[in-house]
Image (tube, rainbow, N blue to C red):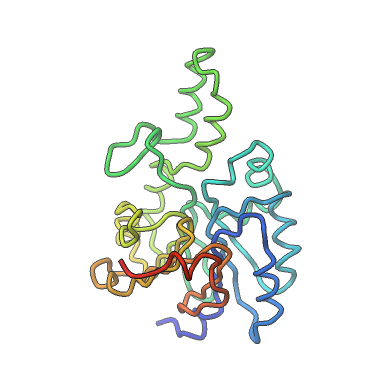
Length: 249
């Protein structure tokens, strides 16, 4: 079993939306620096993501991230996220080991143009979708924008590859079914991977999911906008909207 001291030194950062001030203040004020920092998507970097995060985090801790849905809002932001130094820290579709914990990442969101479980997927791979757009030719005048948008969509090949692995923690951008706007496909993935914790951002709230743990078989941690919560469940920084948006359901 992993002790609580270890999990309390793994920080989970909610949607920062281009502002790392709260994280910087927490790093300077916390008595014990984190062992690792994980960003749960919607970082919206205003410059190449690696140098931007490193400047904020400094030498406090290594960091990893998954993308959300807003990293593709503009072409520049997409390049700063996916085509810049720091992409090697994106653990979408991967499992990394930190302090004896296997931590998996699934970035992006489900979109009906690609796959909205429980419906069957329309495309299996991002490359399949790009070929589809090329096949449309001039009939699809918005091809570039659609290609960029769906760079942040979840495709079955990434999901299925994770389902073949095991992990202790699953980091997702969107939420499992315990959130009113969540999706049970995340439950299924977490259960088949055998995880003990699922952490998510996206909804800008931090709900108490403890009543859902017996049904799901894992603990769920929601992290609010620019909030920070440890894997042990301790709130380091409350999300900006937590007081207004959190609560039981």
